[in-house]
Length: 241
Image (cartoon, rainbow, N blue to C red; front, side, top):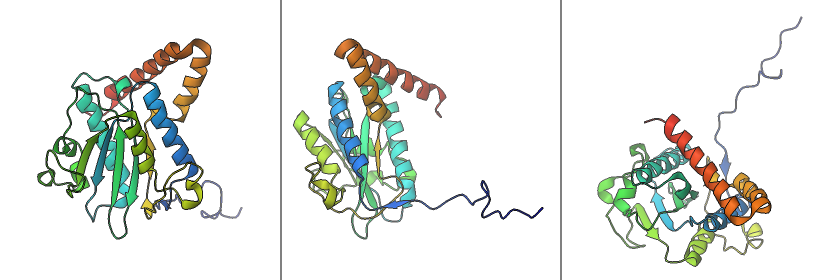
């Protein structure tokens, strides 16, 4: 019996280890993010806060999405310690990259009016390996201050919509007209380019639509809250300390 070629028989191909590089947001990325932003507003947790994080040059590009995930986890823990439940937290984020620079991230998330979050406080939630120097992040700063971390609060639902459309400018010019967006090329991104919280993602929109047809808005909202709370309780119980 001839020996199997490990490069050709099924199950023996070497595992792909290279990180995928993309140049534009896809139509699916954009449509999912736009719907998620509106869904967050619909369930009463609008993405009313915009944090921009400029990673320093030299960080591993394929680790950036990992740093974002850790930052979001730390943000949730920070909110929970202030009595803010899982059904009050949600987010979406998009990575961008200017020529010859490290990538930066735009993170939109819900922050209750009772929670005060400064630039420096948010920077402390970013993992140290991301290379953000806390001493370079002032508590408050203007848009053009050059601070590596900038946190802004929305003044209206319309501003939240504007922010959502702004962070999706990495769509190709060919596809931008389908959404009425102003494209601005953001360069190659290694690894994940966009992320949406599960509690406002595509599957939750499907669940909401079904529940709404069955019992109306209040029924759909209650079911959504139950799923959101259950997910956060599992995460809090099984996640690392």
